[in-house]
Image 1 (cartoon, rainbow, N blue to C red):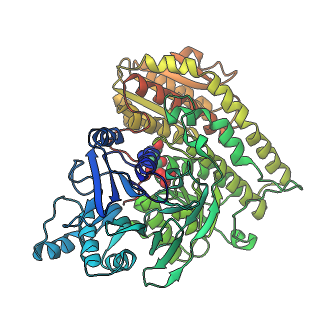
Image 2 (cartoon, rainbow, N blue to C red; image 1 turned 180 degrees about the horizontal axis):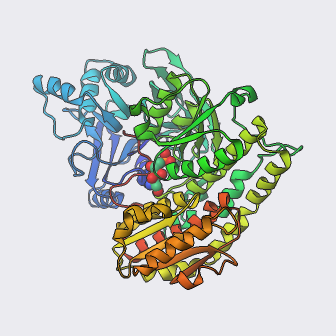
Image 3 (cartoon, rainbow, N blue to C red; image 1 turned 30 degrees about the vertical axis):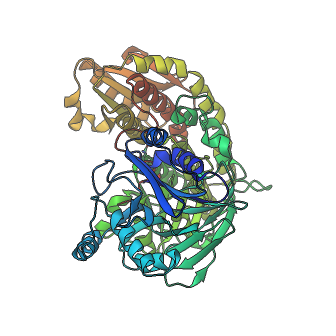
Length: 614
Ligand code: M6R
C-alpha cells in the first residue's frame, strides 16, 4: 500500500518522480505528492485524489528545476484522504521532507511528546511524527543517514521512510522495516521505489535490501547500514522484464491487457520445469527430497484471490500426493494457535510477495520450526526472501489491482508443487506425472480459445449493467472459481456478488433466488464421479425459482442446454485443471461490466494492489 519514489542524479527529478508515481499508482490513489530540493530549500506540492490532480497543481504552480526528489501515492490509513494528510510531510522549519508507507504504531505517544515541546503538527497522519523527529535530528548537526538511524530506533510498526534534507542536495535517505523498498542502480544516478516499476524505464539493475536497514543514494553510489549502524550489502539482481511489460499496449485497461496475456503467462510459468530426462525440477525449491518426504501436513495461507488459488491447490495436492492440506486466510492463521511442527509444510501464496497478513503468518510458522514455501510473482519481495523455498510464477508485472494472470500462474505453480511432491514421495508414477504435465502444456492454447470468444462474453456483460446482484455456483475445483468470479465482480463493478458451493445452496442461500436473478454456474467436466450430474440438479433448482442461469460448460456437454438461459463453452480439460479455463470468462465479464458502468477498472475504489498493513 502506498507507492514511494526517490531520485538523485542528472535528470529533472520532477519528471522521474511523477513518471515513477504513475507506474506505482496501482498501490494507492487517495492522494499524491512530491518534494524537490532546489537552491537550499524544499519545493513541495501535494493533492488529494489521483495523480492527475497533482499534475494539474504542478502545471498551475510550476516547481523549480532540481535533480533530487521524492514522491508518494497514498492509500490512506491515518487521517482522511485530503491535501493536508497527503505526503510528503515536512518538519516544522521545512528543512526535511519525508514520505512513508506502513503504520507507525506508537505514533500517538511520539506525537504527544513532540507537541509537548511546542512543535505544531499540521496533519492527522502518523507520518508527520517521523518527519518532525527527523528534522529535529538533522538540526542537531548530524547527517541525514545518522538522523534516520536515530529516528527508526524510536519507531514501532511497519514502515518504509524516504527523506531529503534541503541543506544536503546530494542524497536521498531511506529506511525499511516490514515494508517494501528496492534500489535502482543507474549510471551517475540512483533510484528508490516501492517496486522496480518505479524506475524500470531508466534501469533494469536493482538491489534488494534486508529488513531493518537504512540506505543512502547519491548520484555516485549506494550505501547500506543496518539499524544498529553496522555496514551491510544489498543483493543486486537484474530485472527480467522491461518497460513494455508495464505499458497498456493498446488496451483500455491494464487488467484487460493482463487477461489477454494469460496464455503467454501460463506458458512462461511452465517453462524450464523439466530436466532432459523428463523429471520435474523446481529452481528455487531449496528443500531436500528428504525434507519433503518428511512432510505429513500442508497448510496453505493466502489472502483474496491467492486464497482461492490455495483452495484449488488443496484438491490437487490431496488427490495426487495423499497429504492432508488445510487452506487458511493468512489474516486468521496465527490467531487460532495453529498446530505446526517441523513436519508441516506451510505454503504461502502471494502475487506481490508483500501482503502483511501473509508475511506475519509465515514468520509465525517459522518460529514453530515449520518449513515455508512461497509461491510468488515478485522477484526481490519480502515473502520469498523470508521463505525456505520459492516457486516464482513468472507472470510478469501485474498492474491492474484485480488479479488475473497472477491467479492463473499461481494455479500453475500449485499444480507443479503437487506434481513435484508426488514425484518425490512416489505417490504417482512418472508416466502419470508426464501425462498431467502434457495436459498443462496444452493449457495456453485452451485459454486462448476462451479469449477468442471474448466478444460474446462482453455482449453478455453489457446486458447486465442494471443488475444489482449476481450469484456464482461451483463444485469441487469449480467452487473456488465461483468465489473468484464473485470477488472480481464485487471489486470492479461494486455490485453484490456471492459464490457458493452448489451443494450448499439448499442450506440457506437459495432463499436469495428470485425472478431474473443472474446465476453463473461453473459446470464440472462430465465423467468425474457424479459431480456434473449433481451440478445439473442444482441448476434446475435455481431455474425453477426464476433465476437466469448462465452456464459455463465444456464442449460437447449438451445435457445442460435445457436448463441454461445462456451457455458459455469451455474447452474439454480434466476437472482439476478446469479452473485455468473456467475463470477466464468470469474475468472478462467483470472487466467489461465495470467498464460499461463507467468504473475505473485498474484502480477500483478503496483498494490497493499490495496490502502492506495488517
Ligand atoms: O499480493 P497477494 O497475492 O498477496 O494479494 C492478495 C490479495 O490482496 C489480492 O489477491 C486481492 O484479493 C486482489 N485484489 C484480488 O483481485
